[in-house]
Image 1 (tube, rainbow, N blue to C red):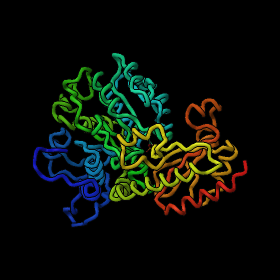
Image 2 (tube, rainbow, N blue to C red; image 1 turned 180 degrees about the vertical axis):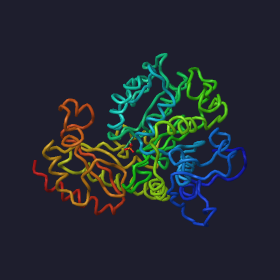
Image 3 (cartoon, rainbow, N blue to C red; image 1 turned 120 degrees about the vertical axis):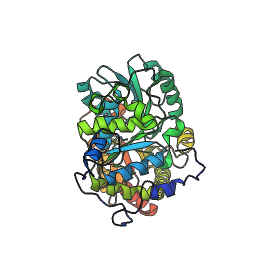
Image 4 (tube, rainbow, N blue to C red; image 1 turned 45 degrees about the horizontal axis):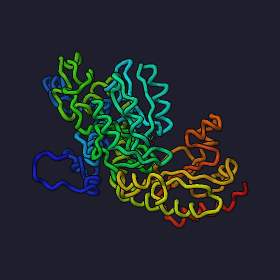
Length: 434
Ligand SMILES: *Cc1c(COP(=O)(O)O)cnc(C)c1O
């Protein structure tokens, strides 16, 4: 974020409230308005020509950018310490546009297999149609990334806190592999949020979020964002990232990386990816998510405090076989948690019931305040029993390999009072007879 001046950089909580926003120049509105419009009037023909030619920045059409969305982009970019960002319709759209800017047919990217299930599907199936090949590595063992590098490797992708197993990933060690291979490191920071972890400080080049989860934080809007860290030298890169470095036929032969320097990646995702593929975020969702960002620090601190209390309670319960939460001192990722995200180990984790599958079903059915659903990162406490829901179609072996064995319950601990959260868990465990 340093721009070479000596101005004092505001701290995280201040940026979360103010970055990118100013009173509306037309009306003085203090909150960022919802610019609910498809299109924007040009000043004159020359202005229109310069906007279309990328010689001036400005709003044209809400598929490509919108003023409410721009504030959200500036806000999240500031929190991550990036140079620019692009907000889109979902976390999956952010991943899709990122790879669309990086890969050609036949190219590969290496990915830690400890990953959000929807991303596993996107990478294994949807990307095949584009000729983009995922090569799986083990996010807990950086050397597996090194051995997976080939002359077709164009990127490495990991999650900072891997969903749902609560694995805390050594971003710095994997960044060293990416640097040696001459490819950018992409970090999905959804579970940690920039409050707990800033991947750029550990060598990330591109940071992605599903804004749907903790950043929006209220379970009301789907969104995603691509943050350009401004760290990767596209023009000087070992490999040819053609979207960034080739003369661009739709922009008068402009080379995006040459013209836009350390925010060229965000521009490429917008003017090539979003313009042509179209997964735009709505102004309404940008507004709702922006409201969520303002309280990110308060919410994440409470989420983590509550999650630790719940994990400690569960660990002492005689119907519970194991608890996998990096905030507990005996957890195998506890040291990595101290290194990567010392303010907290997140609010999503799994535990196992001694009574197996039937106990898992009884437990979720007896909870009152927890909502039984397939989401995380809401103000509300959420629960799912993967074996009877999201992983139902798999065999027992496949489920266990995916960290979704019959006894596994996943919690996303909310920001309610922790006595009420634990009270609900206590009475549901009492009702378990299996
Ligand atoms: C939910 C999620 C995604 C996908 O985001 P959507 O907004 O649902 O498209 C990607 N990564 C992680 C870690 C997620 O939790």
